[in-house]
Image (cartoon, rainbow, N blue to C red; front, side, top):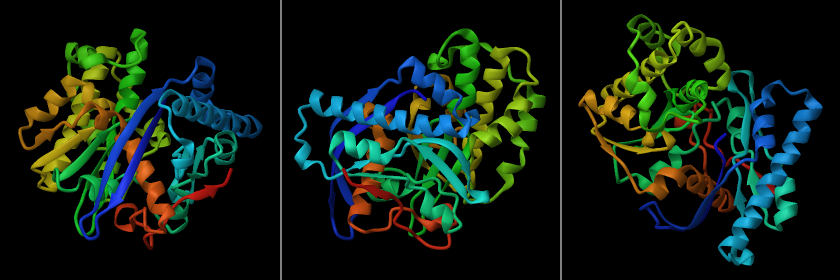
Length: 341
């Protein structure tokens, strides 16, 4: 919900030794207020309005990419493809579906560049969670830099590269924190200032830590449905927003530390917007079990855009880009749908 990350990257295969990459340009395009308002209500829209929003979002994606091409003087003829994740509206793999909007044909038609999107669907059809998708990039692009890779976005997810890579959602991340920050008229809790001022409600913290999701073995993933029905009602038992924020940060740090200990993670590579919450990082460090590695700002902010570009490159090469060891599917798949201009 904080904008569209656009990243122009090249990838090179080194047989048996993974891949290298080069980020040539990267930029985030903010959503305009009207589009942001519609996206925030998308799950509850009537079907016709949702289909309309799918097209409108595709237009926004396409126009943003065209602005990017003009801004950075990109030679469009040298761009192999646009790999677009889209905006997730529904994610219920246990019921056999996941829905990301942002019309691929619209993007292809408006930019003149072929588009690969809908990366999750084939894995869900194969019985997988359709998530997370980033771990194959962690493994093949960054695998020698840490024992595990944590991304703190709307949810906090981790990937642990090996011959049989494991990855899963750990817990909620910025989604509940940003929601509380909005009570103070802020988009997010900059540096964790609000959380630092609050107190932990240990009763609620224990209830959150005892949610059944945390006892399930991976592969597993979280969606906003789970957040709204199971997590938020417990958190909202705390009336003070400062204490709610503090307890939520503590919960996230507890769950990250629990996973690090369970999988004997010595070095943890961090990305995502949550990296800028210095109080959260202090809370994670306070457990003392794991060394936190922070990459460059460009990687922190654009790693997921980079890796979706990588998924697109693997798709074009006809190679696996979704790992069944991560998602729980019956087989590895080459996920994605191609849209020609």
